[in-house]
Length: 320
Image (tube, one colour):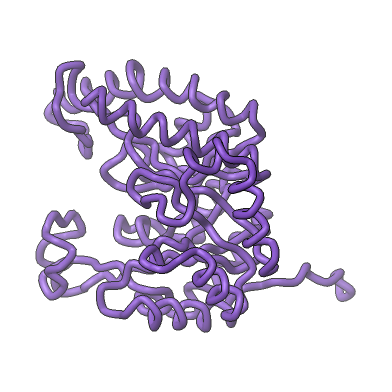
């Protein structure tokens, strides 16, 4: 396995400065935002696709530092009920896939999206329970009329270009756990897989080892991000929490850099489970820790993961 980083945390710094820093820290890979929620500070598909010389210089800057691009990331909501908003996210998605194919990057990270409650809706509507019966009917409509039809066209678009789609299982979108990820994969095909980010699963009560084994070969990419679950606040209010991410002392859970939510043994078990199902690609650090600076949170994650990752192929079992 290789260690990488989603460079969005360094979006205020020039790309070459970021590449130098990442290389000096001993990482092997970078993940680049290409628009939508991650922004495109380091990688704008519109610019790079129309200028071959700019694309060549871009690729050379990365390769000269011994780095690879593990994925391009364009997390957005192409199923948004506002057609103008949805069309913009769809454009970013397709430009990202085209750029990935041009660069030889095999994975695009993204969200599944979430529709509204009707064709005339203004906002997305994420269904979290089956009763009252309106919710079950709405969920059926969303999947059958919006989710599956869109991805049955958008998925093969990527597949024809040799690009796999890695969906982050994120609450607020229709794909938020292994069951919903595998449902979409079943409807569309193996081009659909997971960008396995345990931080969004931890607070839902999902066990990393069990969920990794359930997903198996459907894992296309992995994010290294942690979550601290506050036992006091969770005991009172549960894990569904709509308070601002800034209300740290009152929230049921908070994103943390790896090692500050779960211990080394937990992450070793996660890495071992990934190896067990055949995943041998990149763990990409995503830093969204409100209690740590960008540089300290990043360096802590790098140090922690270097002790956790299994980077060499296993030896032959001479004892068996």
